[in-house]
Length: 156
Image 1 (spheres, rainbow, N blue to C red):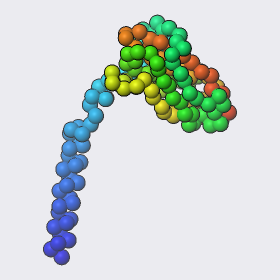
Image 2 (cartoon, helix red, strand yellow):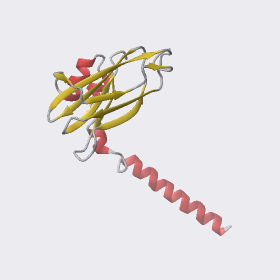
Image 3 (cartoon, rainbow, N blue to C red):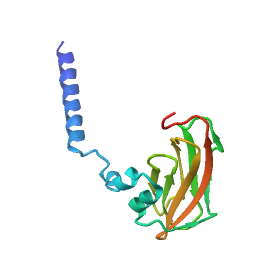
Image 4 (cartoon, rainbow, N blue to C red):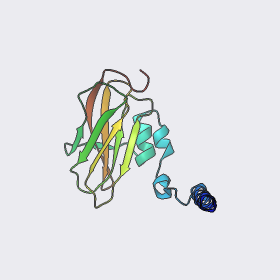
């Protein structure tokens, strides 16, 4: 009986310490959260999302950006998208969905030692372009690919 009490007290103390640590924010990913742009993700159009993320909307079309996504998405709730950039000095990759109410789906900040490649799944409300925006050497580059959605993900 004494061993059970000790296990209970030890487990309670460890749980309490973990909850206190999480509650104080010591384990929170502050660096990642600090870079989050609320204005960009709350924007209701592509230009406002780009301004919130990058401060401007001046983009150059580029054949060095490849977007892989299905031509026809059977279900808009889960559309696999990958973006690769052959542009030297790729700093970030953003995925925008102009057909959604909030078009900015994701922004990935890349290290100078990483390959310009991201892969994720997005939710698309209707047939629309998937737009990739790459920031490299302080400039913005873009490419797009149309994806036809047969069953809506954001409302259907």
